[in-house]
Image (cartoon, rainbow, N blue to C red; front, side, top):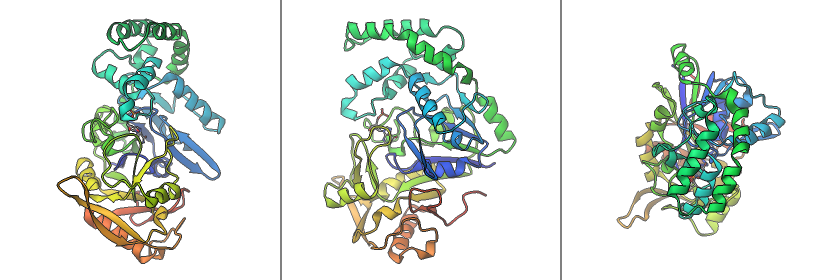
Length: 407
Ligand code: IMP
């Protein structure tokens, strides 16, 4: 069964968008199973740059059915905005090819407000993700099924009554503004109603028919609420377990694809053992244009952490690595990779020689400088997972395929 899952192996922003796009073109189904519009996948087709936040990347090629799974949280207003931008770029989005699970939860203005006032120390994207998942788990959330049964406005009012009782941090006039805003949110929800239907039978049928299915991960393994650097994490399961709970069916992924950035970045607060605060960190940020696709925040940059990636491989059972942004390392004389940690948590580094040559857009493995190949091969030997693909630039054809990604 040709089922693929693509996940970020680090703290997100590994460059998933590009490979997801290459895969999505051949897929019958593309599904997002966790997260919300906190993600930002950048896809470049020719001269056009598309940014998706929640809509599965399969919409861009237009071939596949695209599903927002039950594990996601969906803000009606921002989803409509995202759809509108894509439509203006010529992308066709219709209910026969785009589905929102009725069991997915809504992200409402109150969630964005609470995210802002409660979660500063985490450095969230302020998209309301954590508070929406909080409501889900404490069983006070509003699911998309309420868009279909005519009870959405009532659900919103009840929800704000609950918020008023429980959250002293929300001032009375804020509650009033939110109450007054219910008709606008309802209008947005109404527009999206045609897209809401149970996707599980479609997925199950696709599995039976041996169709090509792609699970599109968002964020990265160490932002997983269970396996990440808690509490500096997002509020969903970004690792492989989330694929099952977030879609509602079992399937045996034959390609579990790790997107590994050839150095490490992170946005927001939280531990980052190999972080660089010097000129090299600046160089990586500049070479890699490391600014968030969703928030524009500069990303923290550091050396490749192989000890951390080993754990990522254990959690997700990766069997294929896409090594991204290798071209951003050109010109750094000596590269360091963390292979273990000292008892105080600081990294044990192994040094590897760098390379001078600009390798942007290379497509042949043998054409890469010897030290670049050594860096790649050291990584795959250390992790025990093949680097099947090397990404050498932002364009779709800036790749070296060492092992076929399609069977
Ligand atoms: P939240 O997902 O907005 O609640 O943010 C929680 C943490 O996850 C923060 O450190 C964010 O910066 C981080 N985060 C959320 N989404 C992404 C992403 O797509 N890429 C990288 N970091 C993310």
